[in-house]
Image (tube, rainbow, N blue to C red):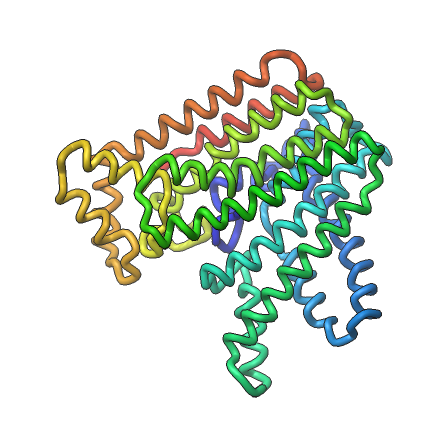
Length: 386
């Protein structure tokens, strides 16, 4: 799931062509955000009218959800559906090219459901430059002077909003006109993605509760929550919709799994070392919140290998301390560098990127798409921490 930040994070910006200077020879995804948002407006407006007929009192819930969905985000999954569509030989223009954007709109609604519920589970206060939905509803309750507990009301309404987003996502996905064989393939990908999304969040919560220090467990969580759900499955979905051959879908899935994992590892690095002006979140929040990542797990593993119980104690003392001072955070960052944890993560990102690029070179993808995907991979790998 997306990192909690106000603007898109620096790692997400490598996927977002809107973050780049204008280019007269623009790449084929320059208008993805605008096209998918047009589809989102249309499908949400239609479903809001249906909701009005069912439960007029639910208008505020639907309106709040619509505003949240349209408030921004990198539209990463939408872009991946489009890239998968092109790689599978889908049309770049014309009426047929609308199909991947309808699928992408369903994915963006699914992502909205995940974000709303994630914010409730994590107690996050902000999302996409505004209040998280549970905060929005609890604030409304307090200002109106209603009875009962405002926080509990906000949580309950946010859970319902997330459920509504999931219902809209499923309805939107089912309404996309696909031929029967294509529908079967798309359904398999959609079901797998839903299962992986839930499994990843479950594993993340479990590892946090356990205080897990296992690097491989952290990698598996990142694979489920980011690599598969955010990149591999959307690429696969776009290719399936284009009627791509099985070998093209397989290449895109394996490419997406690797580059999606590299993306998440990069974002974890930026969560510790990133410039707040670029990442959109205060530096050190991931440390203070005790976020269990491959980076911190590698640091503890390397400290054990170095037979340095003092280093282990310093990591554990600072990680998860909500009152950690600026001095303590600087010392934590320096310690991870000294232990070689940052270098280990950078090496893993490089290896994943190289593997992803190598997969693109067997000639199965539609002309031009391999080069575009290789550039994407390199943008992830080339972002450096201070």
